[in-house]
Image (cartoon, rainbow, N blue to C red; front, side, top):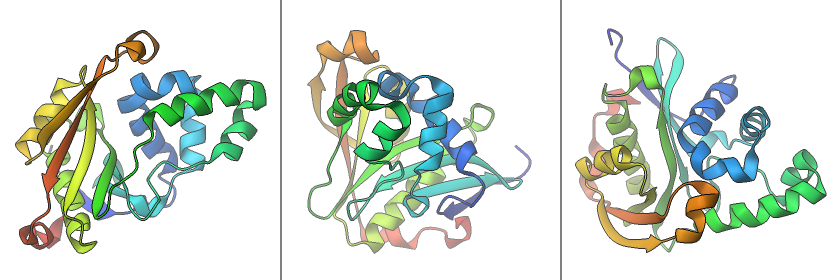
Length: 207
């Protein structure tokens, strides 16, 4: 990659469809049952993004990676029950709401919860994931959180390896055999990364 990535807080105006596509490509395994078909799912995600709950990495002005987080009751992916029912209809929407409820994660006190990280295939292995994680840690430090929390599914070892390289430690694994046939994974591991004072003093030029 010749052009170095530039990390920015927030989803740029006009990049909603690109961010939704990246997010869907990364998490369709988990979200597909609730939001399929893919075109409708990407449109729903794009229409209900919370721009200020994302970190983006830009290469030549295009979003190459995105990381979302939950803070103060809001995450990157929005859209409430009424939005989902309006998009999918009541009969099809109600079961989808129940499925999404299974994936809901609420932050504990002084905890920032990651909504996921997605990097475009052509930019993987270039360090963008690490840049996004460092900026997430800086956001958490500025918000006076004590830790960052995320969940990783058992069929995504590459993501878990990335998190471990950047200070995340597994604290528990929940077996979810009932979800293997439905969503394609059978266990979810919760990982924590402590927030230190150094987290807010990383290279400011990445922003």
